[in-house]
Image (cartoon, rainbow, N blue to C red; front, top):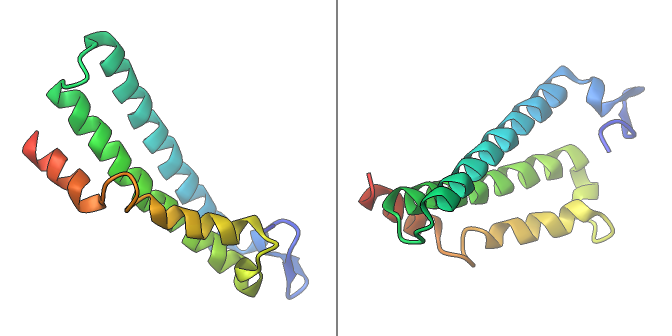
Length: 119
């Protein structure tokens, strides 16, 4: 969308702030992916679903994923402007669905409590 949408005669992606923000968020996604892979590797090695370190890392990843999904969709809405609220755009649905991450599978505070108990 940022490549196709033009403002002031230029694509949005040509705005330095926007492409820096996209690069920053992409870095956050990759860091979270690495954390998830590390957690899965540890679970496979230890083969104990109640291993304290595995539960701690999984809770951290879940907490971070919930926050990051809301941050990502918030920025997508910002970049889409008014179009981001239109039902025809995927970003509108994603922004509603992202909010469920902090509620549906355990509130962020519950994940933080799990992490704190295992520190």
